[in-house]
Length: 530
Picture 1 (cartoon, rainbow, N blue to C red):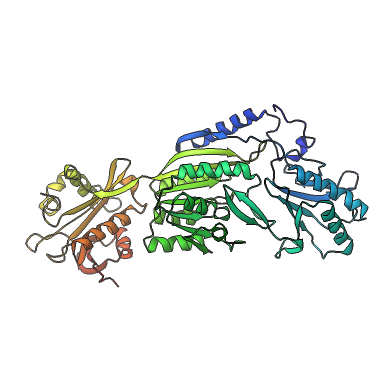
Picture 2 (cartoon, rainbow, N blue to C red):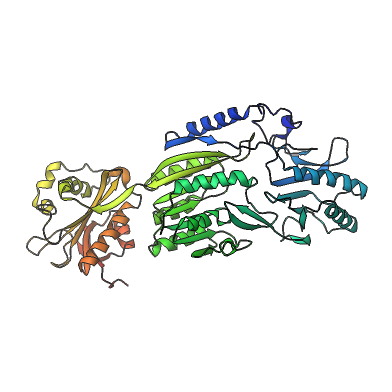
């Protein structure tokens, strides 16, 4: 099909702005747009994946009721261009069953004498894929009258495909007028139970393409631990467990209609309802490992505080499923700039031909590695020792020759002796930060000397990578190394006016001694911390 101008409401509806273009041209326009938006941010921007079916694909239909230009009852929609009701006899995108039911509604409203005072303002139809079953939900601002009840029974008798009729006032919980209050649906060979107002995809067949592409990018492996945040019905939790994940944590803002994991007989799924940021920070506090984290927010994207909570966990991979390209770009930039992530792939999937309803999957990989300093890298310590020197705001940094001063050179001289440990932070094969410790004695103490059995810690990070949580990660990892080696304490020196002082406090370091314009701080290890 090359053009779609046959839609009578094309000029006024506004829901299908691309319909005048051939479908292959629509995909080209969308692919070009994604490349323009994400080429500088992502390593690869793939062409948009199109749909095979371009008519009758909507299994979830929302219809409004009002008066046409002649003042007669009609079903239609709210125009995106004029924000007003438009009578619409038919829509080529809606499922054929929905079209048949809407024609019956228009006819039965007249025969029951309620066409001039039709009480419902809106109707949603949820049609089960591969089966002729439909769930209806009418929105009524007032109590149901007997004439409308007769109308509903007549509609049910005429359409045996209707398995349930639900009534809602748009605010309180919907009530069941007749039959079921939910309809069964399948997606990616998984079962779901959907209430009429569910945000389940309107085209299940294309949703399978979308979710399977996301899972392909996620690369979930046997034994992985997954966190599923904000996603529709926990679909990624279920798919990840099916791929071999050992545990999944499902974070949802509201209590779901049903337990999808139990419905599908899937175990090792732990559900958390409420504030997602709170749960993520609790995971980070207890050191929860996360191999893959899925994000699928609304069109508004993620709150910055939620993204910061994600970064506290440092998942190995983030899969971000977005419904809005502009907010996706904003959120990806934040994850890249504040965390240590690289956007590997951007993949668009067309979920609604002829419209701008494009879903985009972004795959981000954690590119920060913390590892021991290799012997051949010992010369790097000179550079990072210089970076560790505190320079007050407005002052000039000292010359490099300051490293020859014995009070500094003894921090790195002949590194590799007993009691020396060093870890590096590596981003895309480049060392961007180092933390190291060394034992000193009373005859040659360091600035942060506490006693001969307590190693003194030094840390330095390259300027572009500061204020991103890297220092905290390096210190925590070094404390683990020292605990494993049997040390009871670790010390350091910090200038009183340095911003690092608050960081060390938050990491459990306490002031042990005041030396001029600096503090000696000590953190207890081996279970001695309170």
